[in-house]
Amino acid sequence: MSVTIDAGKCNGCESCVEGCPVSAITVDGGKAKVDDDTCVDCGACAGTCPSEAISQ
Image (cartoon, rainbow, N blue to C red):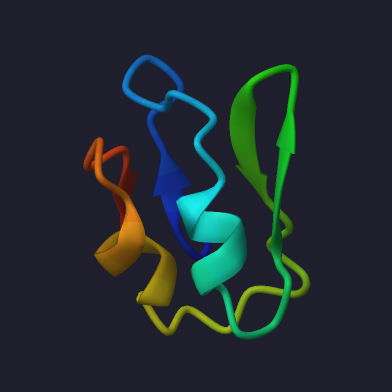
């Protein structure tokens, strides 16, 4: 698995979606989800998350 999203911390703001250079993250039901097949494990999403819900 590339990155982990803590659904309890995620507020669905979509900052990670905008920050992901390979479009590996979507927001569904108000929570972010990562597509492990697309993710390149660059960490850009973690750097944009104001809730600190994403870790590598």
